[in-house]
Image 1 (cartoon, rainbow, N blue to C red):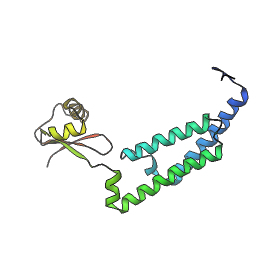
Image 2 (cartoon, rainbow, N blue to C red):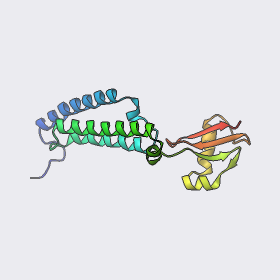
Image 3 (cartoon, rainbow, N blue to C red):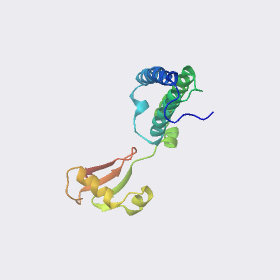
Image 4 (cartoon, rainbow, N blue to C red):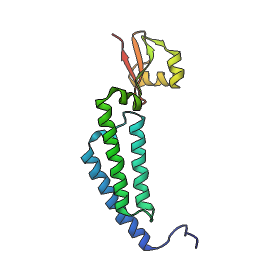
Length: 159
């Protein structure tokens, strides 16, 4: 039998409403327990965890073959793994270097670091936009620009 395009039955709608509220509440509770770091955007690893949590939540809500408790356990497992990885990275510099990138200097005292810009795929226009966003009209000889580990560009005065 084909799946209806617009409407199957009221039981499906009711399931989505009930499972959606319960799964969402469980996720919020687990995130509050696990701390702020779980949803930070410090690095690619944290970004991936955030995307996975959203994907899992949508699967729990929409997919009839995923029971609520199995979905909640999957969410908890991902949060626990993320907590363990960040706990380990804080205690082991070697492990931290495996999962985190380092900031990259793109402009040093007004001089573009072309090799670093190519490696990080950042254009002069993106740097100019960051300079403008910092309140300056153009890059000066005493300014530097760093690509941070979260992907943001930080403009600061060189000392």
